[in-house]
Amino acid sequence: MSLGEARFRGFTWRPLGRRNPVVAGLDLTIEPGERVLLVGPSGAGKSTLLYGLAGALGTTIAGELSGSAEVDGRLGLLLQNPADAIVAERMGRDVAFGPENAAMPRDEIWPRVDQALESVGLTYGRDHFSAALSGGEQQRLALAGVLAMRPDILLLDEPTSMLDSDTSASVRDSILTAADGRTLLVVEHRIGAWLKHVDRVVVLSADGEVVSDGTVQAFLDGPPPAGVWMPGMATPAPLDVPADLVRPLEEALSITAADVSVELVTRTLRGTQRTQALTGLTASIDPGTTTAFTGPSGAGKSTALAVLGGLLKPGSGSVTPELRRWKSARLAEAVGWVPQNPEHGFLTTTVGDEVRRTGHRLGRPVDVEQVLEVFGLARFATSNPYRLSGGEQRRLALAAALAHRPGVVLLDEPTVGQDPSTWSAVVGWIRAARSAGATVALSTHDADLPIDVEYLMRDGVVA
Image 1: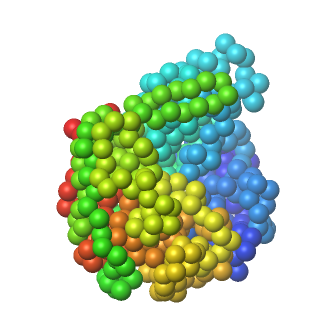
Image 2: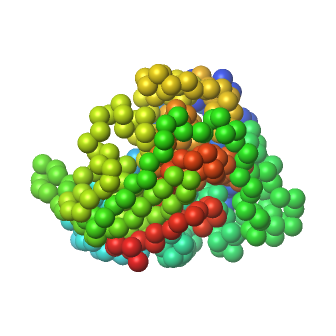
């Protein structure tokens, strides 16, 4: 093999607890210096190929592996879930982790750290707590850690999926600058902005097979592959979800925040950091309405949802009704909340039990089979939630949080990691819940989502 080459031969991977392999008998070679875009439906095995090259399958991740996945040169991997890559409590130490483990000289490490943080637009300083970052900021921090290593091969799993359009463009430029002369393999769902920067597009089918492999022009001239967001394609129509699956089992609530400010406090053994997340927020969410909090990462969108849902106490101002004072069972009946990191809410060992659990605890009926069918997860009913892809996990989190039909639906970045078909299912559920009278609020960077009311946020305030 040549420096910077990546190669699969007869590559097959079946995760522990899954009946069928995600990828079977795959042969693929990425030449040194190539820039390759890897696309396909949610669950097609795109992340699996990156993990295979990184040596994580069969070691860190349990399952059956056969065939080979090989690389020649130093490897940098950006994970789909950035929280999985953060290893240090402060940003500078986190980015320095890779260079330190590579035994680089100290006088070389810190200039690399500062350059990497600047390139991804994180200007808080080295001592800022990693845990105090928003999800999108954590994605940029994880990328900075990869760029600081200056690897021969860059493997990037949805590097801009949690970012607004302006930040995405800036981060993409940083990636391309860092990739100059290096091998680049990028996984993305929203591919339009990448096509002019890559040499080759590899398309996987839902069964993990290579169905197309060639130049960008050949990709654009060929028939549109299933499960891929093609440039210029029309926004998919939302799935028609039966009203009986989403109709609230109790009266939906109007919730109002009046002049709310929130200071988030991050405590560690080495100190405390305070971050002003919201300042003077006044907003309301109402039954039969979809309300969106939009804006760049770190603007306070997730905090706004958490305050309205009774999960955070305001430092000042008021929220009516004060859901945070409700007992947990009553709050669970009223509010379905899906966090930005979907796996944080998983409690069981099978997908079916995950969807069933909340309704069972509350004494509410749940049609598990039909809910899984809507979200395209029926074939995983007996699988472990942690063996799903990132997009599948996000849909499972939605199903588990909403199957008991709460009156208030709070969703943090609900469409991240979805292909056109699964996007249609997620948006179909949102639309059906709204039409059935639920109060729906979400944070999002997705300009295609149908909404009724928008609060554009910047630096913790409504712009």
